[in-house]
Image (cartoon, rainbow, N blue to C red):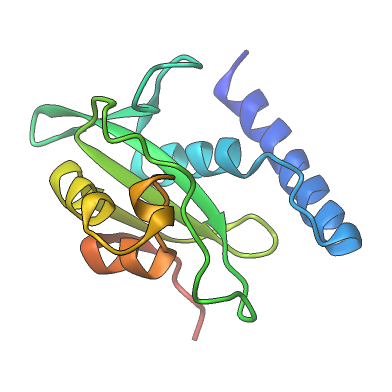
Length: 156
C-alpha cells in the first residue's frame, strides 16, 4: 500500500470520524491512527510497524534516530481543561512522546513534544490517581512539560 493511498483512506476516516462524533457525541476510535499519520506528514516521522512496543515512529534529528510515541487528542473550544492524554507506560522504551492536538475535523492544530524524563517525572509525581496509576496526563500538564514543535498557521 502506498503512502498516497494510506493518506486517502485517512482523509475518508477523518470525515467519517467527524460526522460520527457530531451525530453521537462519541469518538469513532481512530484518533490515534490519525494522530500518527498527521505527525508523520507534518514532522517527517517514519512510522514503525503496528504493535511496536513503546514507540510509534522514528524521527532523525541532527543525524540521531529518536524513538517517539505518538498520542492524539481532539480538543474543541468547549472542551474541559481536564482532558487527558491516553495512557503512557513509563516502562516502555522511547526517547519522547508527541501529542498531536486536532480540531473537530481531525486536522492537526498543534504538536507538542515532551522528553521521556519529563513525562516520567510528571507521571510519578504524588497527588493524582489518574497520573500515578493510569499513566494519564492532563493535556494542559503535557503542554507545560513539553515544547511546541508545530502549530497550524491561521490565515490573516
